[in-house]
Image 1 (tube, rainbow, N blue to C red):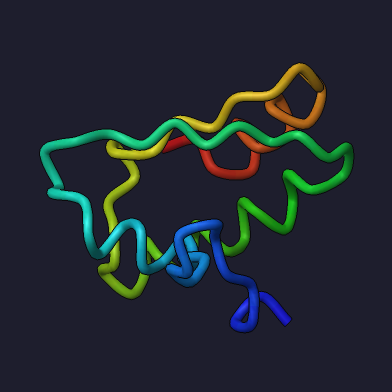
Image 2: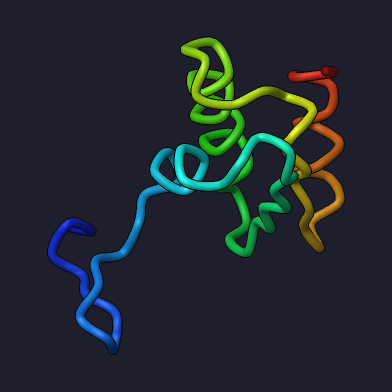
Amino acid sequence: DLASVRLNNGEPLLYLREVFELIPESIGMNIEVKTLGAAPKLGAYLRRLIDTGVTRAHRVLVTSFDHRSIADLACQYPE
């Protein structure tokens, strides 16, 4: 469980939702997908964060070396 993970300084690992809540809206976020096949789940999660007002679509940039996943996300979430 990620809630039990601690960084070297003892701080807890933040969830993406918490990161969006902590960083001012004037700052964009670049989220790089490292795991093949993770983009659809990330897209659905980001959609929930946007729909619930946690963040806005214009703040989020998703990148990856897996260009097909990024293209699929762009078709699924054009905004």
